[in-house]
Length: 519
Image (cartoon, rainbow, N blue to C red; front, side):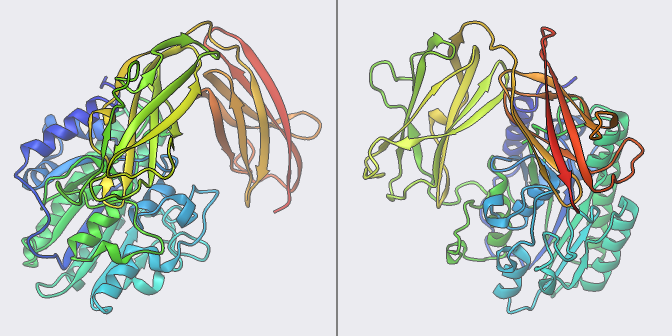
């Protein structure tokens, strides 16, 4: 069994990037690029397979360039939201793409397809071939509907298995990938995600799906060589999210990654992928002001990053005071100094907390002096009472040039809230009707396994929404598809949703909410 991806995946990614040749911004812009997406390929699992010699084509590509994690930080770790950010560079608040049950067509001028067409005066061939039609849809109401005029080929309707996606990729490479032509291909394979959900992340089937896609990567490379464009084409492989270790879910799987054949890569954010694609084509990112791109290119040295420093005042040398306190009583104060030599204000400064070895919270920090000069350094604060547990924490910030660097960005421990574990309670249960079913939200006071049942108005069970799902303390969301146990869509009407939460010590709590469907 692998270590948790937060540690093993990160260290492995840094090792791969350092082992590659020195990388930088391209000496001249590319005019040809192929991006291959492996949906749901967990970073740590892929790294293990590379070390074991199971992914020779990806290993060869990385040896020519680099590979690094691109962490998901602004949205749920799911396909629709992930690829929306990859293909635009913006979070859900701007794209409107939060998930499969909450999305809208992305504004046309935000997509890489539009921006490439505009940069080259429409003289570039752009293609989208997607294995997951609903989550990558270009049909009316789908995320990429408004981008269709900017795609010469758009196959993003319905689900397509890897043999179909691969053959279509070969067909359109033959048609458009000419030595003197400009082109951008985005080829999406769904299999790792599909097999992970069906079997689990640690299964032979999941691993076999990734190996199959490595074979398709080899075929794509061979086709580019056959067409005489292998040396001039920027080739990238990436994923949208990881997978929960050993599970069939990706509820907390932010370890996305990017690999290229043309540059080493720094560790970054998923928001950095679109700027990397655009900048590789020679596009000036500063022209985008409505809104500005939050990310920056992923090659080393891109932009002038801000600095984070510890305050240095007594008791705050490690950014928090006190280091030990009483659970639910002691206010822990976190403090960090943001500094930027160019005077750029941060887009955000935030605190990342892990509790008892697992991700816990991301908290916004506020400036102590709103009118402070970033050139001199501005203190940012966050005050928080904590549940009982052992904590790790780090700080992060970003400005127009990218992510902040400095000792506070490294995860550190030594923070403890003592006291009894909070009693399990289930609160704020609500069910919001969607186009097909409902979105269920609730708050837990402690970690628990949750079971959700669908009842008719008479209280008779007619469906199961989830079984024994691990949910952390805090706000949680479930999605009901609108179907019963037989897989049939239930008729419009009033239904009851019953949640049962079970704590590790056997404590249980139950709640009921009503939802009315009127599709």
